[in-house]
Length: 439
Image (cartoon, rainbow, N blue to C red; front, side):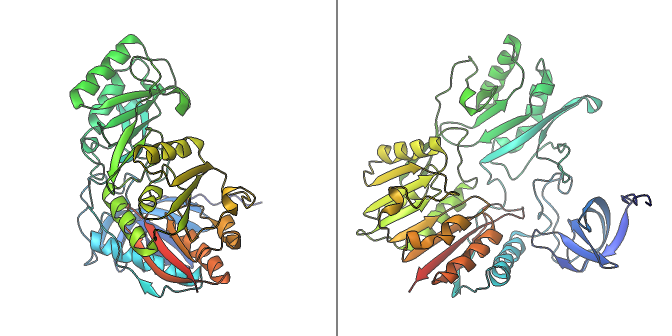
């Protein structure tokens, strides 16, 4: 057998032909595609190949020779080195237009259907919006420092960032102080990640550590918490091991406001990362679904009750179902705190057949689905078990939404409305909302 050809990582030049769904410039050479982060259609660029898989090369732009008129100067000095953002070289208006186009294209080509009407995209702040993030940590002796940030493009290394403008204050300016802090700990190589959460009563850092912290470590962390007015929690093992700096089991809860309601949650529980878009998403969901005081509504993948509780203010009854037991308990607690007695919450694996569950055998006038990226294929394939007249589908992955839309169409549902929600500005990601009606 001949030797395998070595992957060429040398700097190359090309002209970009189009833009991929994930916002990378596409060029073709002898029938082989190269996807270049930071490049736009019509540009002549130099690029650095990073990796190749299934005949497709992933690369990053190194120099722009002929820029597109749509190009803007990225706000972050670490753009293209850091893998956290992919679209800072486009204005927010252009980003939104591209994501809206992607949603339309995927509904057309994957779902084989068109919406009767397309809603105006929901937008919010383009920077300083991210209230939740998981940062990687890496002690690099050769650099004489600890790196704190998102992963680089190829995922192997942590980006060497001094700031992150998509994070909410004070997190946007805490990367360097966190790097200095962890570098002073007794075993900086045993800190793999930090989870950030901006909520009431104060910003919170959840520090994962693989080795026991000594008295001096805890003293340093305490001083840091006081200096930057943040809460520091420790996680030596799983989420059930979270403690405060005194080593006591932490029962601390954070909270946020939505629709006049107070939501409590634990630092490890899921919340939407963009508070402004979360509020506008809820308002649009209520407007589209139009719940009536006589109606019973089923909310699948309900989490801590983010959509369930506003629906319960307007409907006769809301049943929420979620796979994570702790979130189910939190949703019930939030309903009780907000004096909503017309709710019930159940823990169930929604990727299994749940048609025999007691909650599934009830009648529901409308259904809300807000699944993870994998979508809700198992639910929509068996939608006749619920047979709602209206389905509101909220998605964090437009391709699986389009797939599931096609399945719902085969069950007699019409896609009445659809729209993009810019939950993650500067990145390739988006949320989408779709309303299906069975005539």
